Length: 261
Ligand SMILES: C[S@@+](CC[C@H](N)C(=O)[O-])C[C@H]1O[C@@H](n2cnc3c(N)ncnc32)[C@H](O)[C@@H]1O
Figure 1: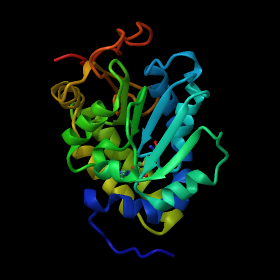
Figure 2 (figure 1 turned 90 degrees about the vertical axis):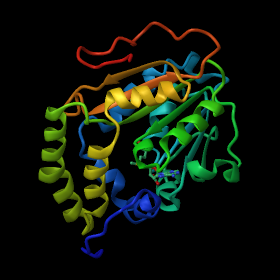
Figure 3 (figure 1 turned 30 degrees about the vertical axis):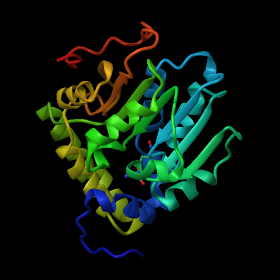
């Protein structure tokens, strides 16, 4: 049984704490209705063409591979490089069956070059990652540089700051379900108390959209997902400027979600 000691987690500790929770991660996200569907929805919104034939994609902060599977679902013919800083999360990912075109690499966003991850990529997915980074602007700039002109970035994450209702639902779900469940299943709730707190402190939809524009992304738009996560989980899409214009399908945001400043 893990220690019940209350531990405050800071961004630099996050991969280490994921190491400790890696073995229970899939079970916990598995009871979150919509978790996998929403990842697949965000990837579809990237508009990757032709089942991914000839594309090179990056799943940054791939964890146990849930987001990698979503990329593979939309682009089964693509080469996918999936990177994470947690050795144990990657070990869980590698236990699953993947085509040879999917490669898992240990590395941090901050030192991607040391992991020999270089562009250009035809698309990048960052699912539940950006919130955990100390310098989000630097990370977004790096992602932009790694993309081909015109290629999309999808940031998939919780963003509740702009809505009191979203913050209240998020807090209720965390303290009534997620945190007690993690304590029962793992003996520790430190990661999930950090999750609750980090989401409340993360950019709202307007701020993150503005941040993406400020670091040089074009066609920035935000869309939410169905289910209890409506107006809580969002896809933030942007493109490296240049290249072909984005496809027109599935780009209309639901009412009430601001897309342009
Ligand atoms: C919440 S998990 C998300 C995993 C996966 N993308 C998914 O959708 O299920 C966040 C992942 O980001 C990784 N991570 C956190 N900080 C990182 C960093 N600085 N560099 C690389 N990975 C990092 C963690 O190790 C963890 O596996």
